[in-house]
Image (cartoon, rainbow, N blue to C red; front, side, top):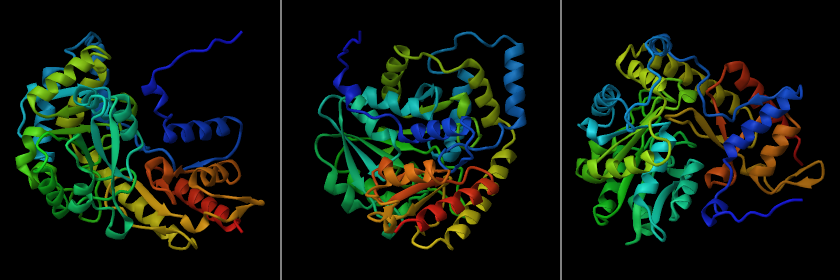
Length: 402
């Protein structure tokens, strides 16, 4: 006999992560013996740097498996301050730092600490899939800041001004971008800052998780470098997952005004408490140790990006702009929508992605998951062989449409 449960409106308002769902389905098909080329997962395929692995082993031998302060070890917060001083142009103290179980938790803590029912949070579109759901779980309303491929997915002051209201409590910024790979220019950030000057109640969450993964000599300008006047109401979000290939270790952080970090600490105190003690020691080693592995990985990603783009240049009907950061190509496949596969008219990228996975053996993420129908996100954080197999299968799938 089944029971009916009444779930909260907040939980009912959110959806399972599309990227995790696709990765899970691809894994299931592989377990069934099917050959799947995966271009869906935003995860470096490199091992953690050797000195990070050694730090974990050393911490374990020393018995560093106890609770730590909820906001993180003092020496970790010191290391994060030094990192933030260089990367984000913010001179912070340890009291302004919260270490978290991944950058995602830092964003979640901030939304819980800052948003109330009826508040609005502006998120960039295309957006990382978790932004709107984090806002909804805080009882607030996500409002989309629309961007366009026509200007390289750069935000404009006019677009931001059109969605800001007196209810805007949070503005989430993300450069380099997941899913587009766009690196926002200093001029674009200046336009954004000029609009924010008219809304002093709005807190900025700057998601900088991909800041070290940029290509072609491009540099990702820090928001506070461009607009230092925003420092009293900006929270920098970062972590070790992407740049240091430490995704499963779940170590991120937030750096911002003491009052906001203190409020976020209340959220963390009442939920997870401290991130893993071993992961904290790993992060200390990552941030303070040799940085050559980061650069080597960045160089490899740049080569893979160029390799993927070269393959796409030969695929009819696909427009793939060159990303300056992160490790994704956001490809325009709108020409395939409205066509048919085995007599079925394909109206959206969710169904297109299902066909590509189930019939052609390539896992990609539909653009609709990021608020941008007509696009597919493809990750080049994998081997060239996997990239080749994936793009060839995607091309075969699109060619089969009539």
